[in-house]
Image (cartoon, rainbow, N blue to C red; front, side, top):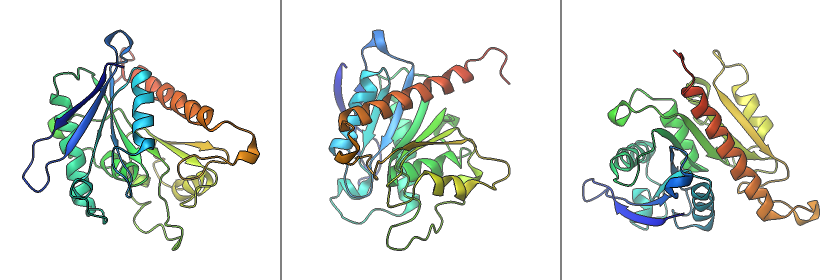
Length: 245
């Protein structure tokens, strides 16, 4: 990895956000950039975010992380969805203009809340900066239903109409809903949305597994990272298929 490059995104004084680019070595770059949003309770400096961003960068994917405005302002309560969505779009536009990013294929995603907002954008590709359509969406630990309420609220409707290839990485012990619950929530959608659910056996909301299972935690994360990059490669290969309409 060539290292992390901090940069500031343009915006008004109340919503300017800081971002970090993880740039892979040019010889290993995969012609892909992943704009990666954090969850509700921790920002881009959280170990999950930095660990996964570094891992993807080491596998050839340029990664941009950022803080939503409420996190930049050190507020506990997340901004409302329209603010989160607008910020995400501005980050995509800012990353595309960054001098060290030359990747053609855009992927968006995030951890928990960040992944949910990425799926909002994936279901509304008509509103995109520079008309750049994402090649795919990746959600890590999709928050289907808050554990105390078990109500999915408005967290399913947009998934059922998403048109961008989407990968949801979900632990089977996730208190926000497991892989089977996500599949059931979109099962009768017509047309069927292009959503793939990758189950992490024994994983919780952040893919931590029980020690009694005998698996090494680092190898669990490495396996997830390998599978996500393999999925990104597959989406890129499909987009580059000669004669594709």
